[in-house]
Length: 461
Image 1 (cartoon, rainbow, N blue to C red):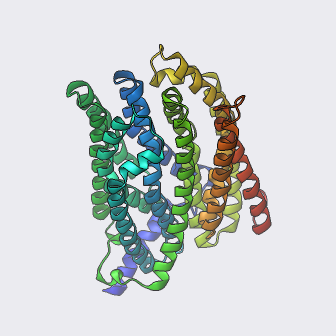
Image 2: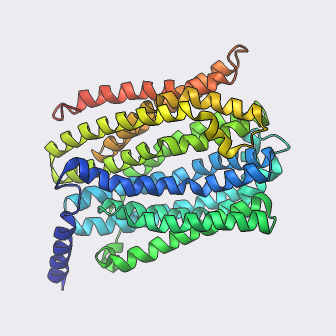
Image 3: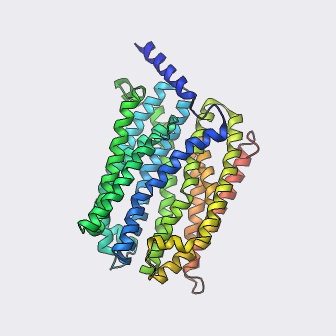
C-alpha cells in the first residue's frame, strides 16, 4: 500500500511538474502564475474598498475616517496570520520542488496546528483589548464609537482569514494560483452586494459594512478549504502525518515566525504612522484613509508579483536550478521597473479623480490633502516594487531573517522620520508623506548590497 501511494504521488507530481515553475519559458511561466495572484489580491482590496467607498459616499467623513483607520488596524492584525501562512508556503514550495512527499504532508499538519493556535489566541486578545488599542491610536472622540462598532464585528472574521490564506498559500506552493482567485471573486461580489443591502436598505451603518466583510470572508475561507481537501487527495493528512517531528516543527516555526515578524513589523510601522496621522484631525485621517486604498491598488500587483517570484525561486532553489534562478531574477527586476514607472505616472496624473472616487467633491480639504499624499508617494513606487522582490527572494533561499531586517530598516526609517519631520511647523504632515519613499529606497540599497555580497553565483540581476 505504501509503495502504491508513493507511486501515485510520483505520477501526480510528474504531471503537475509540467505546469510548475521549474520548467518551461521563464517570463511566461512567472507571469501566468502571478496574474491570478495579482487579480486575486486586487479583488481582495474590495473587501474594505467597498466598505470605504459606500461609507464615504453615504455615511459621511466621520464614518469614512472610522472605517479607514479600522482597515489599517485589521491589516496589522491579519498580517500576523498572513506572515505565518506565507512562511509556511515557502517551506511547502521548497519541499514540493524537491519532491519530498512525506515532509510536505508533515509540514502541512504542523503549520495548520501552529497557525490555528495563533489565530485563536489573536482573536481572544483583540476582543479583550479593543478599547486600549483604540486609545493607543489616538482616535478622535467623534470617530471612536463608530470605529469600535466596526471592529467589534470585523474581529469575528479573523478565523476565516486564516482558512483562506492557509489554503491559498498551500495551493500556490504547488503551482496553483488560479483557484484561490475564483473563491475570492465570489466573496468580493457577495461583499459588495451585502454592503449595499445592509447599509442602504437595512440602515445598519458601519456595522452593516463590517458584517458584509465577515460573511464574505467566511464564504472564501470555508469554500477554499473544502475545495482543496476534495480536489487534492494526495495532500490530505492521515494519522502517520500527525506525528510532530522536531525538525519539521523547527523549520515551519522558523520560516513562519520570521515571515510573520516581517509582516507584523511592516504593518506595525504603518499602524504607528496611522496614530501620528490621527493626531492631525479628521480631515487628514479621512484623506489618508482614501489615499491608502488607492495606494493598495497601485502597488498591490508588484507585491503579488514579488510573492509569485518567491514561489518561482523557492521551487527552483529546492530543485537546484541555479540558471533559472538567475534568469528569473533578471526578468522580475525588469518587469517591476516597467510596471512601477507606468503606475507612478498614472497615479500622479489622475490623483484628484482617484480621490473623488472615495470622497464627495465638496470635501475640498480632504481631497487636497489626499492629492498631495499621492503625488509625493506615487512617484516612487519603484522603491516598494524592488523591496517586494527582495522580500520574496530572501524567503525563498532560506534567508527569511534578511526580509525582516529590510522591513525593520524600511519601517524604522519611515516611523522615525515621520515623527521627527512632522513636528517642524514648516513641514507638518508633509514629513509623514516624504518619510515613506525614503524608507523604501534605504532598504533597497541594503537589500541589493547583501544580494551582491552573498549570491555572487547568481550574477546579472
